[in-house]
Length: 164
Image (cartoon, rainbow, N blue to C red; front, side, top):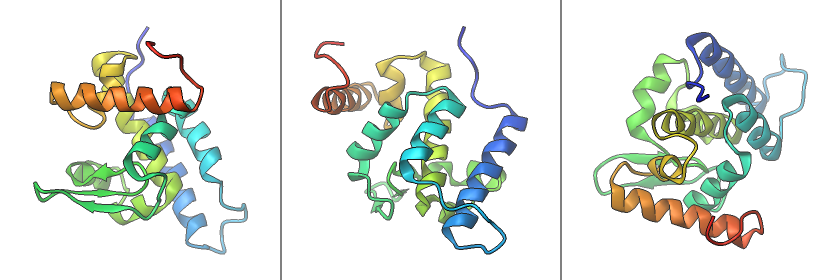
């Protein structure tokens, strides 16, 4: 059975997790634990949203080669932020959830937000390559090309056999 993206209560928990990651990254003395590594964030975000952390890693590689500070200005006037290149079209929704766009440069916040966005696509399209491609674009040509690029990354990492 397909599960929906996080409910409001779950979103609040995600926001709190993201806020923890942001506070930790900024060196908040009130936060006793050390910052989680990006590897831990991929695993935790994937588990939290029910998306494959390897897919999240492949998207990060495809989008920015894992550069947490990556910022790209698109020809349509939008911008993409962080290693998973969260597009500015999502900024207003993220702000309503308590996540300012500036927080997206924190690797863990960026990963959790990307997992949430990918889960939304999975609810719409199922656990399919179409959903993974739609993370990048809803346009069928671009969506399908993007999905193939993620497949190719996973194959090159030995995580997927060709043709799957």
